[in-house]
Image 1: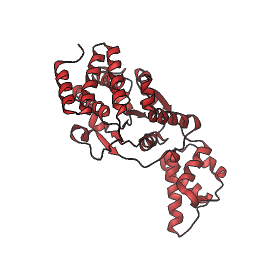
Image 2: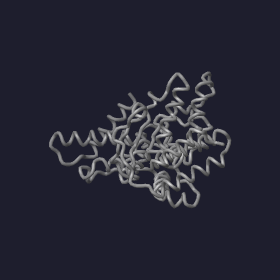
Image 3: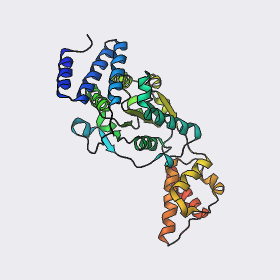
Image 4: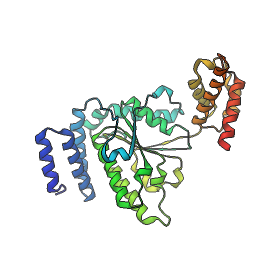
Length: 321
């Protein structure tokens, strides 16, 4: 039998007390144990039953204002206010984000037909290209809390401690719907072909087991600046991989226009293409803010192309320095 006697007693107690979330949590623990024992069909059926039952009575998500217990040391909770309209991405990448939102918004319909919505996501690309912002947008659009994993607290020199902390995070993701972001994920998921193949490999394997058995109750997002060093075993475990890149001139202008608003009316953006080239979304936003503040501080009402160009060149110098 996949479940232990303690699991059975916990199921009975939670059912008798009417604690649905506790019941679901124990059922998912039984599913995870079944998967570890090789009973993959049973694990899949149990997860599907829990998803269908939970979705049928799912109410508006309760926000997480202050994580408690062990979780409080492992995550930073927030409730982003940045929306989809503020996210500037290439057409193909934007389509992937819309697909994720569409699948999540129609979770019940997909689950009723035996399919899970995409919920295990890998974001990869250079720093400042919108990976963290996308996670925030997903949380905002789905009315979910964003929980950013603190890798400094998660990683331990003792493999058992790290695996235990990972379990806390994934167990919480099963009972508290949210967007769970493993930022700078390469610290955990890097290729383990070197001298640390022992303990580090077991930590990565623990993550892969938790990821593979996770339900679609929450979104699990891993973000990295260094795809090339990620362990190859990771890629097939994610439902979708989103590739981020530095913005082209059109996207760069859209990013800066979005931050400057009406203060940039009349600016000829094509004339700034060369100065925007090679800068990340984050760099462009900071350059826009710098140009705007310079104008406001001297009592101006409009920012000029020359002032934006100066801010862009200053930002480029700072990035190179």
